[in-house]
Image 1 (cartoon, rainbow, N blue to C red):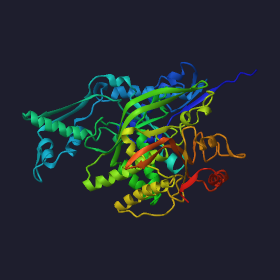
Image 2: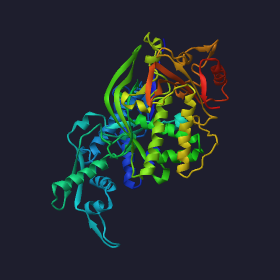
Image 3: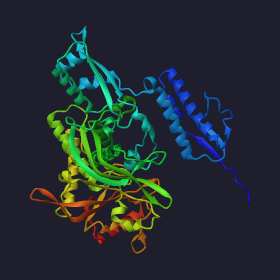
Image 4: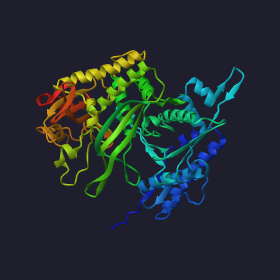
Length: 554
């Protein structure tokens, strides 16, 4: 028997992109030094169990290459864990003074000033007296520190993984990036005055700050970061939800519930809806205006909408099959706020609330949130698929709780779904007109665009959770020897399919009240057909012969 010698080649990126962000010579030096340090840490860790061939001098920190050759086996997971550990060590050494997180006073003053009226802004924050002179305000903003060191107990690094281009536009390559964040810290804010103030005025000052902090602090506030629990001033829509599905996981495989999945879903559906009523450039512009985003050399766009989520009753668990553990979540109760991050007129705010409500209802009508949102939860609707313990968990399931039943679309007849989707489509078109843009019937090149010539929605009434007809088609033949399993329609590993499957709780409108219809669900298939794919075309020819009815699309 011949012994096989294994070699491992390691590289990490983006090196050039990281260094290109440098604006000064010292930035360039620092960026290069950080990358060399990260490379050195991989080499030192690998040398504990393998032989490092290149670089030959692991004790040099400066000038270390980002290409490493090892005699032996060093897994991708080991590399990722080493990189993240090294990054954490760097961050804890350099984040603020003495390694303690700090919210700057200047940022606090800016947030405070934005919610003041003109008189308050002048008095508290200062401003111009005339064209040549300025006057300081009476307040001094000292920023904020965490109350204690419990922030150290949670990882400092979040993995952010944008998937909009992959899921909506094409199956193009995509990658994650890192963000520094603190997990639910209690912050102590400081404000002082240059003159003595009455207690009643301090109450006014702190009430202004309460309004300011409702808009969030730090970065990515529209995705739920840096948000307080209460949103008395900024909330547009508040719904109570429950849901279950596959959880995201950290490098060490620990499960994690990430509220930014709500914004990701809502933003993606906004883009799909707008691309069905106007051209691609306008769709992207309006989506960015609503939800924010990067604007290239012009920096970032602060969106008019954001989310804040409070997981009232959340459990993280594991689903096990064979020797594999998959993290799962069960949210028994949670409160999702859609919030407005800027000052708006009453009329504009009303229109924005109507649009945001339609997008939210649309999102939960045809799908869900988070990982595997395009498929139904097999534990609920196809338990026999999982009973032998040798199959992975698939899908998720989301519902409004009783307090938010009014947000369900009532479906008194299956054909009412056509009107529902027409109304959502019209809401998107009306917003385009409101913004002074031109609606267009032009077909988008994106793989998922909610245009009647790009999508078909099919539905039927299922009597209960055991009555899903389509779930078996994803795993077996649907007629004769015909199958969609593993096709471009249903998708497979690293390739997103073109079909969504949803079991939506069936409600009807009775005397102005939405009432659940026993244990019934509306089973929905949303399909973005590839007209060049024979498997898809055969399936679409079959659907009218089943109990499904086409409800939207051509």
